[in-house]
Length: 150
Image (tube, rainbow, N blue to C red; front, top):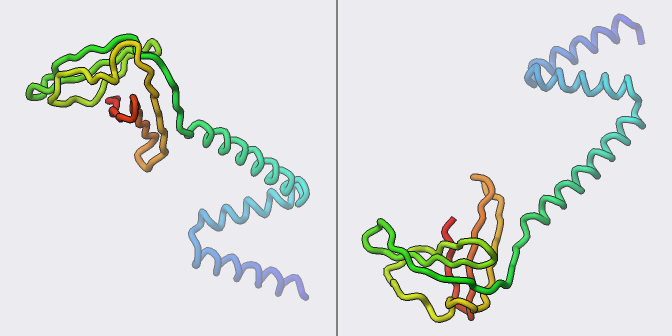
C-alpha cells in the first residue's frame, strides 16, 4: 500500500472518530495507544493485572468493615430523661464505657430487661447507600429490640 493512501485512510478514520465520539474520548484512545507503544504490551498488561489485584484486595478489606458487629456487654447503669418533644422520654444506657441513647417513647418506665447488671447485645450494621455510609445500631435484651439514636 502506498504511504499516501495509508495516511489518507488514517486521516479519514481520525475524522470519523472525532465526528462519532467526543474529543476527550479520542484523546484518551490516543494516549492509551501511545502508552502501549511506549512501554510495550507486556509491561502494560502486568501493570493492569497488578492494579486489578490490588484493587480487589482493597475492596475486600473495605467490605470486611461493612460486616455486622455484635458485642455482648453488661449494663452499667440506666436512666430516663425527658426530651423537648411533647413529653417524650428517652432511655440512656451506659454499657461498655459508652452512652447509648434509645429512641424516645412516651413510656417513662425502664424495662426490666435493661436494669443494671443485665447482659445485652449491641448489634451494629453498616451499609453503603447512595447517600453515603449508613450505620444502624440496636440493643437486644432478652429478645426485645431497642433502636439506638445516633
